[in-house]
Length: 257
Length: 263
Image 1 (cartoon, each protein chain N blue to C red):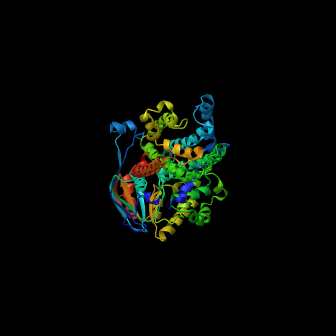
Image 2: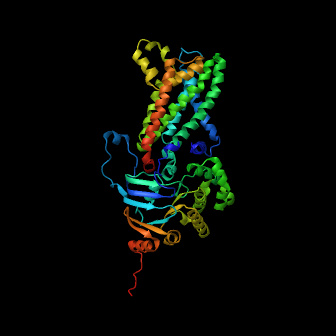
Image 3: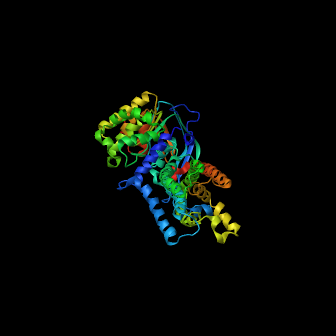
């Protein structure tokens, strides 16, 4: 890996430039998702509490961290090649390093939040189990999945400037359709609508990742085998497809950004 | 990750440069991106200026250790040629190959993080050229000494003047063990002393076997540093030969030569 050190430098550059000159600096990476989670907890945990889940705030938070990682990483990766245009236009290096460094910075935040949330959830719910050992593998799949999407989105946005706006418009309904506030199988009104349930659980590729992380941390059990298979396949497909698309399209990057 | 760097050194020796029937056009619309609508409809907006043909069927073979000046009027395709040689921009047609470690100085401060200090940018820039931390550290003192920036090396480069950008950028480029040096008109902002120092350093690298391609409008600089001159006009190669013949040809092309008194 001749460019491992470049990647390291890009991550540092990303960390530095994002919140340069702000008093809290890098801490903003943690504060933003915490505020978001606080707001959603207030909305859906206190004002409109959904009745069916125990320890609802924890149920909600675990799902939210996964979603926040996914959405923040993809949203910040989209314009990343344009943001680093000066570099792309004038230097020759593996351009994958740019979206990959953006995703990695988000990953660090995500892991910090997970490290905060996991012991609290496990302690309150008494869900300490061997299933926790599977968490690193699940998070690795999640990272690969997000990285693949980020690679695709960043190179697509460099050529077609509609991609980022479409994405930010899509993320809001996508968020509400993801099983963050609810467990699809506990929704009584869908219990005999298998098609709707299928869409909620399987068509949305983020859903199995949320379910898997929540099963382990909040539920104290290994996820269903189908869920595990799904996230492995989704991770491989996303990172393989994203990388292939990126390499295919990157030729003209210096001209279009 | 290294595999993604497109191989540009297929079948050429380090320092050798080959350009065969190279053509490249650029769209010159103000809005360079395409919108999704255009992609879905399957065509680009009509109207606007047509694409500019920056390189038209240019063939060029440069041997290791040669010093080549590239001259021509603004828009003749000089910078495009360098961008093609450095592998940043692909060709529409033809073949390009550039052997070994290619170090390009295409723009002052290209690839610098503006909030990073000069010292940190040395690491970032070295990493962009595929060096690892140890390799950069081994060169760090020599690079810093060459810049003569003193304490400014630890100041953010956002505070640098253009001359200081040159000092930092050139000093890094000069210590990367280049097989091919591509320099685009950056030396002009250096003071006289530093320019001479750069020229001496370039000469040292050439003596060590490196190849130089220099784009400049400074005729005296070309004459001092280059043995061979390529004149480009409208994206075509119109002269390729020794500098003694090339510069007069260039001056005639530009119409800047004084009328030669008849004998």
